[in-house]
Length: 363
Image 1 (cartoon, rainbow, N blue to C red):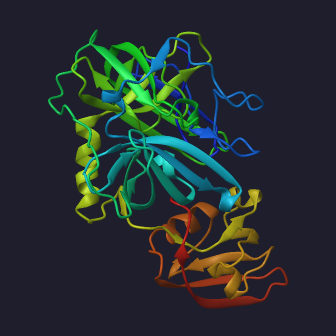
Image 2: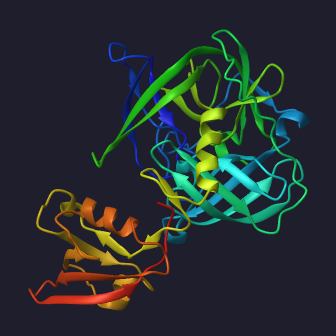
């Protein structure tokens, strides 16, 4: 099997492996949402010059397939870029289910209801990055058509399916890719190009359907027109496309956890606190603090006086040895809360300040 890719937003390229069991592996790679900025914020299989994929063997979705679907458009890279994906309406007042990677890194989110064309501002209720699920809430929405999920888990190999979403992020008619269930309970491990970490998605439905970038977060329908999965990943590097979907029962269970408002080891509720430091590339290899390459205008770090060349050594009572530890510590503080930060500037002078974290890009 060729590479597989999560339909993502973050701009990281991933290498990965997919398999039913430890003895069966294959090259895999996360698949992007459609980027519409000058810089390609997505990962393969997009050609970094052409930026789009010819989706052979697909048709426009029917009105019934578009019902309950939304297009998700995000502002990323602090306003320098845009990306697009898909989501599904869970409640008539605008609760939306999508992949975490569709909104990861977003500083603003707008959502367009496919069937009506109406656009709403959206806020993140919470997310589970480990299982790649996020829940959004539309502002001032009412009377929306919801999806019809089939949570019976009665999916079988050979069943006919159709993956529907915002293919290539073009925002026109939704695209429908027909295929069959190829395997169940599949797993994909993705590893970033930068080596910053790996994540594993398990229990996926594997389908022989032409699911591509922009379809992420969209619906995988069965032959009865009910949603059995959420499009999440797809193969690359081969003429034969293989797609992967999170079973809808699994996604809805996580959505329920998010809606309960209780954080767990994997579930984060609400907005992400943002210190506003840009880490030097060398910071990812050092172990004596997090080296700062710069700070974001208007951020807590800029207000505290942290400058390029500073090394952050403590955050909110935790010693910081690496950039990863800093990221971890900041992620545990909600937007609007205060935290203490200690650093040594480029001249060797030590500083400590109390800062109030602003809402930042989705973690």
